[in-house]
Image (tube, rainbow, N blue to C red; front, side, top):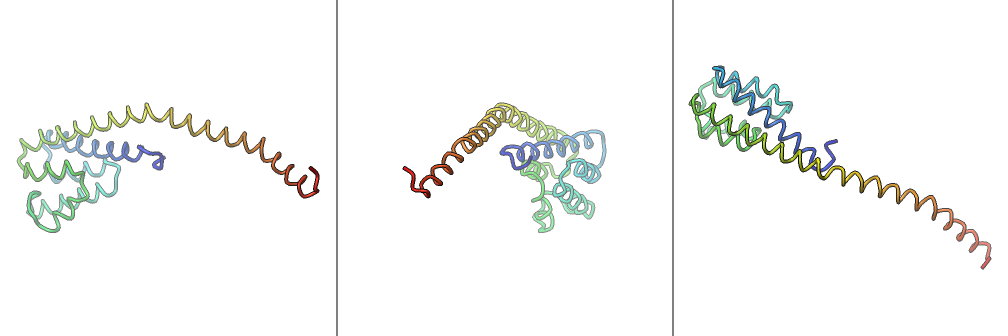
Length: 161
């Protein structure tokens, strides 16, 4: 299904929304940011996001701030969605700002997912109609014209005009 145009973007947006929404909920309930990051990455459904979240959580527990230019932090944060990466750099572990920032990021990804889903609902029936109709037309033309061309070939070999 991921080969169908637009489906990969839908899945990616849903994974990003799940990650940021869980991060927003868990930090809003008082969970520490590294723990929330690990749990949110685990439920995202994406191995790369999960690994990035674990790496960043480990670096934060060692004392590295998300807004630092440490090479390992930069490398780990590249696995996160760009908006979440920018949000982490802006809040710098300030719990009150972090909750609101994550809510806004989750809302953005939810809206983006909804727009892409509406787009897919409009385009998919048309695309499927074109694929099915094209396949039927091609199959019918092969069934009708292939034997005719074979007949003409055999007649030309026999020399019949």
